[in-house]
Each structure stands twice: as structure tokens, then as C-alpha cells.
Length: 375
Image (cartoon, rainbow, N blue to C red):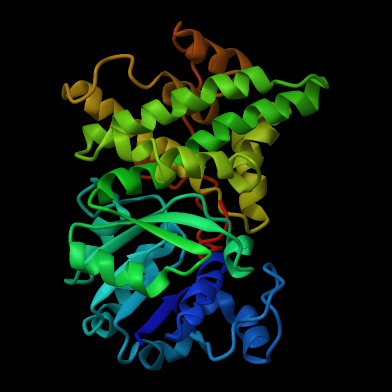
């Protein structure tokens, strides 16, 4: 039996208590300061307010001021907060994490380092923890994980023994875990599928606005999105083949069926301005990780092309999405041009807004909601 501490009492963090408890582990769920209402409900024996299910028997719940007790003796700590909050949550816990053997992250996205470099989240975690870091990817809706429904994911890391320990801790009859030695590929896919889900969500919004299905456009964008994620992973030192599996194609498929990133695309396709739609969702406490990921990913892709690590014209859908989100490009015309390979249509001089690449925070990168939940 292992002691596992989950950092973040949001949807996914809480859901992961299900497979861990099924395997008989000592499971501890720690909530951030924004989780106080959830923690109170769970400590009182009530269900999680969004998952609508109670915690498995034996799971101990800790409030934000009890991090030391929650992490004491933990062999694995699960980072289950949103990408924009990873640094602010983990940095103050660095001394308490020193005794933890392995960090496993279900957070998906990028972070800007103090030197201005765009970092994958495992790289951010390594600045605060010297032990192995394992990244999780794949199609995983929190409500289904919490209910014990069939779910297949991939655990990836450079330390094969750490990956195996985490796999053994989590894997059950209904929670299947594959192993990978390509954390870069898994993390790039996990972050960028949120961005591409926004693009594919535009097709749903076009249907709502016009009354006519746009299934053909959505289906045409899907394989191009997977190919571009693979190309970006390869340019950053990962493997394109990783993206063709659970971490990329699989996760993108489940993300475009529902969720906040698809919702942003739907609102844009329905006629709302991208910045206004993102700001409205952020104002309601909804973190749209794909909005920031599109800017970070575009910055990385542009650098990859400039350095020769990727050929010109490798990222037409990402170029189009970036133009829609940050340069007020018309969504249908721009995304269709990406499918046809004709490039982003000429735009009037529109100043870019809230780009993650210019040191500002994208409107939807709100730090109000810090728990990793369904995409």
C-alpha cells in the first residue's frame, strides 16, 4: 500500500481518488484556498458539487492550511491544478515536497519561465522538486473516472521505474494505464489538444449560428490538428507517434465532444468576438486553457520553423487559430483556408490582444479557478 497525496480538490483531482482507493492505498486529498467550499462538503460526507459523487471510503480530506499533514510520508504527490496555477501552488510547497518520491501531473499546459522561455509543466515542477516527474495524458473525463467507468490513459516519464510505480498505484480493471518514455510528446499533446479543441469547436458554433451542420469542416480539421501536434512534439524533442495515440488523438476526440475549450470555439463560431467570449468565460470562473495554449504553442511553432526544426507551412491550423483568437480574423474563412492550404487571409491591422508570448496574461488565463478538471 502506498500513501498518495492529491494536490487540488477540483474535478480531476477528486476523481483520481477512485482508482487509488480501489487499489487500497492511503489516499489524501488536499484542497487549495479556492477549494474551501468543496473541502467542507467532502469533509461532511457530501458529494463533490460538480462530480455529484461522494469520495470513496477511507480518503482523508485536508484544507489548504494543512499541506504539511497532507504530504507527510507521501510516496507520490499528484499535481491536479490548472496550468496557470502550478507555479503559485507548488512553489510554496517545495520544502514539504522534498520527501515525496515522485510527482505525477495531470495539469496540462505551458508556463513562462523567469527567463522568458516557454516551459512544459514537468520542467516547471523540476524547479521545485528534484525527484522524478511523471506526466499523464489521454482521454479522461473526470466524472467518468470518479464513477469507475472504463478509461485508458498514458503515464510518461524519463524514469521508467517511477512510471511503473505510478502505473501500479493507479491501474485498475476500469482505469487502464499505458507506459511511455516520451513525456515531451505526452505533455505537448496534452496542452495543445486544448488549443485545437477551440478550433474544432468553431464548427459547432457555425452550426448553431447558421442552422446548418459543419461536420465536414470539423472532420477536416481533426487529422490536421493531430498532425500539427505531432510535428510540434517532434520539434521539441518528442515523438510524433506519441501524439497519434491516447495522449493526442484520443484526448482531442473526447475534448471536442464537450468541455470549456470546445465551448469557447462554439461561442466564436456563433458570432462572438474571441476576446469577448474568452473574457466572459473567465469572468464566470471558467479557465480556458486552450486560449493561452494557442499563444504559447504558436510561439513555439514559430521558433521551430525559424530554427529549421520544422518546415515552413507545417502549422496552418495553429496559424489560423492564433489569427482568430488574437487578430480578430473571421473564423470560418480563416480555418477553411488552413484546410485548403491557402494560408491565413489578409487581415486589417488589428493589434494582438493578451498574447501569452508578449508577457501579458491571456484573458481566459484567469487564475481564479486553479483546479484541473474536464477539458
